[in-house]
Figure 1 (cartoon, rainbow, N blue to C red):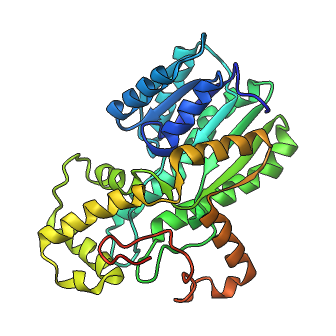
Figure 2: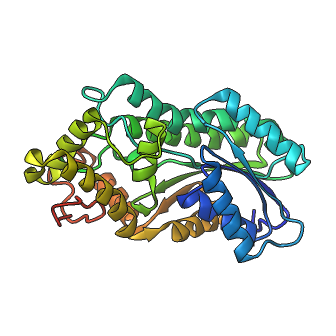
Length: 324
């Protein structure tokens, strides 16, 4: 698919981050987009930014509230998109929505672990199932699934677990790779790509907590503070004795710095993804850090989880230590 002009795309997680930038760039290239998110306000801002950029004639942008971990809501999103865009076919599906959380199968609650896994894995599976009949009717189509570097390397940094997120992203990677052969055999006009971003400048660290708690408040519960203190102490030992207010402040700063210090912006990431789709690449690494970690894991997979493996990588920054 060398051009997105005149095409129709469905995209999850369109309210912020890479999802927002994908919508903006697709629209700019003449592609109509149906997006979903759990935040109507965030999607309204995405649509406003598209209008500021300039929406080409005939291009439609629609926003739909949907929790991608709930199949009934995903089907509602699909049906609403079909009605809004007056179509029975789809050319592009971007399974982009995702959250963090559920870091440890030992210390995280089962509810948080499964919530994180369900958004990141079942969101991809449910939307692929839901939109497949529309993709089959298109002249050509492309499914773009967002995994992560944590889809080939299940680690974040020494002392910090990354259990639910990594498990889901590995599932997304395996599912997408299996579809390459499956679609070639059964629906050769549909292609599939796996996207594996490194550290991208998004609000995922902030949005994750809002999704998991169902609240826009920055006030953390005692249980959240205890979990955060343990995580921060693994990166900056002095945080073990920090006050509750200092822990809460540090987590807010962590979220801000995660976005502000990222080596790749959301807009840059979106361009890399769309260029990869146009080039018919099934494996799209996003960011120099993703390229470097991928190469290092492949060169010595047995060492991938040794404590010294992260030496030389500065993508993830502890909010209070000033160290990479």
